[in-house]
Amino acid sequence: MTAPAFEEFLSLSVDLTAFEETDLLGTGLAHQYLAKVRDACGEEVVTALLDAYRAARAEATGDDGRPDPRRLDRALRHRVFSDERLGPVARNVIKLWYAGTWYGLPPEWTDCYGARPAAETSTVTAASYQEGLLWRAIAANPPGAKAPGYGSWAQPPRIDPRYRKGQGHDGTG
Amino acid sequence: MTASTIRDRHDLIAYLHTAMALEHATIPPYLTAYYSIRSTTNSDAAHIIRVVAVEEMLHLTLAANVLNAIGGEPDLTRRGFVPTYPAYLPDGEDDFTVDLRPFSPDAVDTFCKIERPGEAPRDRARLVPEHDLARPSLVTSPTADGMRFYSIGEFYAEIIEGLEEVASHDPGLFRGDPSRQVGPEYFFSGGGTAIPVFDLDSARRALEFIADQGEGFDAGIHDEAGELAHYYRFRQLQLGRYYEVGDHPDRPSGPHLAIDWHEVYPVKVSARLADYPPDSQIAEVARAFNVEYWSFLGLLTEAFTGQPNLLQDAIWHMFRLRDGINRLVRNPLPGSGGLHAAPTFEMPIGRSTPDGPLVVGEAAAVVTP
Image 1: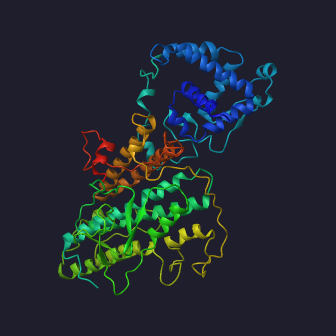
Image 2: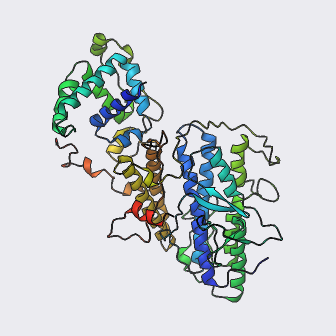
Image 3: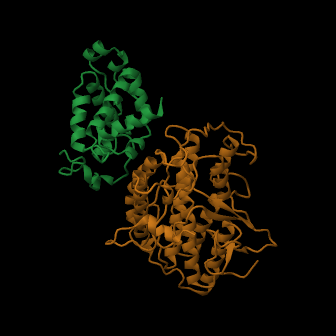
């Protein structure tokens, strides 16, 4: 596994999940998730996904060297999500981070692009359910794991203000 | 035998504040090692460290009970309550360094030293001069200038004798509000029974429990209840086997422990906020952890000063701290050559105020020697 590919996968995941890099690394599963996508879809698809992502960022980057959030949003929809091969994979990467599960891609996808393992739904490790971002997103603990402590339910959920309604983090609403 | 350094209730109060700080000071090193272990690995080691860390929390509570019993005012947010790591503990004439380390043979060596305070030889003084002011001991005498104790055991022996002495001429010594005492109804499943303190007898039992649970017992490695002293719990990690009843201290004969020193996040030893790249996300996470920890210490202070039922809230607070530490140790610390981030436990000076936001890192930097 090459380090630049990992860095790009992490950066892609930040843009796909709207969680920060420290949150993603904080799951302890980033390397396993990239390996999972590779195992499921094959190296060629992962390379194409990262290429498309790089192109989208380049397209959205202005004179200040930073991607404009609105333009990045459009570029990602255009180059990644609407692509018949890459779109389903990118959506699966989001689900992977949020739920800790690789959801099988439909037969139409594997019929076209091979990569049979991609059709199988499977978890990554025993920890991936617990570390799913969805629990952070709703400020709840994964049922049956990460015990929150007696009486913790009397406290309001602690959701990062930037994720609250009306405070879209990327300005796209 | 030297003259007592405890003459009255005020001296005792000063000593018990030191005792609380000492008991707390062992917890961050244990937590750092514990959470550096990758999840689902090293369960033997993780279990041993966790049990001891929880018992240190009981010791902290017992020290607060004794302090409350004599009318003191526990305050875990007072200046210097959380030491700057590395901290220093006595090992006789010398001292040793207590760092915040990942789980490693070095960390276990330190834990063994923490838990086995030696007794001063009969012909030696219980107190020795502090050699190096840049290495302030966690058992510096709060009343005898420039002196520290030979060992943690001697430190507690001084307090127990001081209590007996002061109680003998001050009938009002145990004047504290009994409703502040934390008993088993508030502190449970925590490595022993919380002993409420109302008189000399219960104070002695609480302090002897603290001192005895850590060090080895003269009679053997297990106590009367069949419980292994902390020192021997950690010794198992050094020797790679569990003890059976009746074993020689150097030759445990129980099952082997499965230890994999590599299944550990290589967290930076005694990391400081200054080690974090300024303005980085990870620095923000580290600062946020310190603020959480600081507010947790504030909660414990309230629990120990009249609202023991707040210890129930402390439990979910600790679970949040757990999540915060896990997030840190799984992140690489940029610019550290592959080491990982870790909580720094740098606290602000003085009390928190409800109005003013805390500037944790900067304030702590002021007290850094």
